[in-house]
Image (cartoon, rainbow, N blue to C red; front, side, top):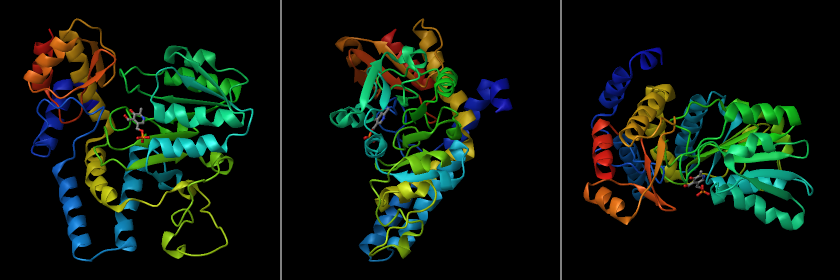
Length: 358
Ligand SMILES: Cc1ncc(COP(=O)(O)O)c(C=O)c1O
C-alpha cells in the first residue's frame, strides 16, 4: 500500500504484471459495473466442476469446500472472521430477509435512485406498517434522526458511481442509535472497506469481485444476528450442513452462518480463484490502480478527480456510437455513458475511451 501511495506507476505495473494473461478479453472492457470478467483460473475451476458433474463425481460435501474457501477469502478481504459472513445468492434476497425482520412502525431511510434490489424489499413491507423515507444520496447522513431505525444505502451508486460519505453516515447513525445496511456490490473488490463498521453489509460478487452471478455475501455483526429472522433457512443454516438434511427440531448456527442459503455449487467453484486473485493483489492496490485510471480518464475530459472506479459522463447517441466503434464496452444509464475501471484495465483503455468522447 505504501508503495502504491508512493508511486502510482509502480502500482499500475504491479497489477498489470500480476494479471497478465488472465483476462484475454479485457481490452476496452469498461463495463465491470454491469458484470466483472472472470480470470482464466476461475474458468478452469468451473470446467473442473462441470467435468465432475458430467462424470458423476463430487456431491454436496465436495462441492461445499469451495463455498467455505470463498467465505474465508471474502471475510479476509472485508477484515472480519468467516463466522461473521453468510453465503448468499442475491442482494435482493438478503435485503428481503432483513426487511421482513423489521417490526411494524420501523422507519428505513433510503437514497433516491439507489438500485431497486436494495429499495424494493423495503417498499413491499410498507403494507404491514414499515415506514420508508427516501432522500437524495448526499442528504443521507444529515437525514438520519432519532426516528430512523435503519439506513439502507449502496456505498457506491450503480447508476453513476457516486459515493455516500461513509464516515459521516457512521457518525450520524451512532448519534441516533440507527442501524446501517450497507450495499457494497459496486464497491467490494476496489474500495477498501471494514465490514465490522456496519451492522449488515451485503455484496454481490459478480462485479468487482469477478465471480459468477449467484455468488453473494452478507456480513452480519454478532450483535445483529439475534435481531434478524433467517427467513431463508434450510440445510445450510444449521452450522454443519451435512448434519442437517432432514427433520426437526430447528437448530440454527449461533453466528452469521445461520443466514446462509444453500449454495448454487457451480458458481462457488469458480469464485475461489477470483477471490484469491484479489486477496493476492490486495484491495488497496486494486483501489490505487482502478481509481488512478478512472481519475485520469476524468482528467482527459476536464473533470475533477472523484475517487470512484465508476465514471458517468452525460452523452448522446453519437458519443455512444463512437465508443462502440472504438471497441469499448460500457453501460448507458439515463442519458449518460457509465464506465467502470477494474484491475484488468490499463492506460490504453483510458486513451481509447477518452479519445472517443473528447
Ligand atoms: C448496487 C447494486 N446492488 C445490487 C445489484 C444486483 O442485485 P441482485 O443481487 O438482487 O440481482 C446491482 C446490480 O447491478 C447493483 O448495482
